[in-house]
Length: 113
Image (cartoon, rainbow, N blue to C red; front, side):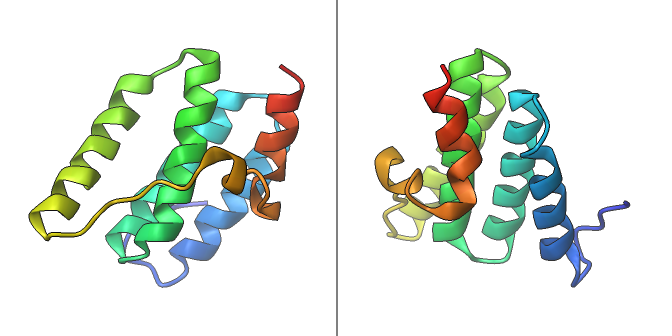
């Protein structure tokens, strides 16, 4: 499935990829999918939703110890851009994120650790 950033179908494509990868055993793939979806959501102005997915991405990477620097840099850039616009960039609390059904795989995965 080719993903094109300008495509109107991109949100659906990214969500489908995430749904598929959430069923795979690789937490790194899950993190990448959450990161990609977060990037798109931020690009189209859905900041709060994007923040939820970047948090999921970072949690997977913190627990596995993989490629954290790149995503933390993205997060820092988003916070800096928000500050430049006099907006507070707020990540959700992890316990609140884990109560959302779309993050049930992350919650289950963390419970197994």
